[in-house]
Image (cartoon, rainbow, N blue to C red; front, side):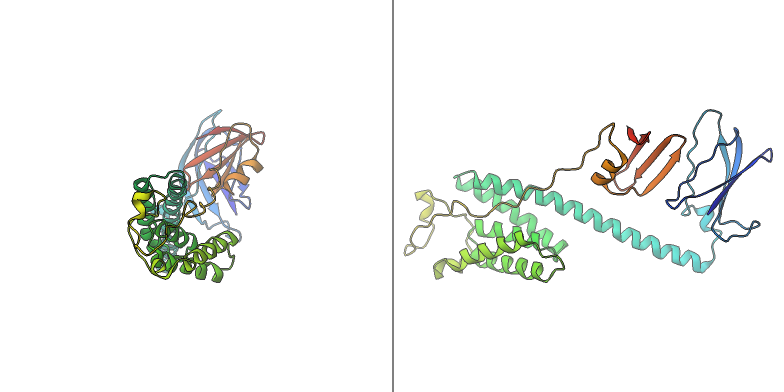
Length: 299
């Protein structure tokens, strides 16, 4: 792949595009037309072009060849436009999926804190509120992504905490089935689900099938909510909390490229502007500038 920049005075510069789609050249100040030719394109043909690119003395100019521009699309055949639209649709679906995953992760963080809060209190109303919030979130999220075993396990945890043992048994069983069938089973989820199922199966028969609306409490006043024939039971450790999520990746001045890539992955786009390297994380709306291989700017 090659770019050819030709100024209004006839001055031309020809430079290759590397495997990452980056290109760089030093050219005199002026107004240029950038022509893009893919490998194998004849000299009298072009893959794309951008008219009137202004290059100022002493200034870096970043110019992207964006083949989603309408002026470029208008040059395509009907079949090419159809394939391009199909690609856009797939990308749009992937972006929607990413947004769903972000929302689910946010809900899971709320659930983790709610479980800690419920385990840390003996107040029945607080337990009910915390487990109720988890149940509400997970009922919605298991509909949005029913193949995620962690969501079913969290739902079962909430239902167990609310003494909805029959529903909890169903949710933990679902979590175990989904996780066991996955390509990469999660030992933590499997152990969690099996432990809670064993606890449910160990309950007296009239409790095991119970779908109540209040959490079990050790307070005498709450014990009256149980059937008179049922002995009081202790449920201080209602559910092992979900392991806390990994801390969000951070970035700071002076970090190396390898450190940034380790935290955020490969960027969606890279550019080289003089002595500077630029990483574009379009999904995070973040631009990272490196000078001499280390972070010098974050936008």
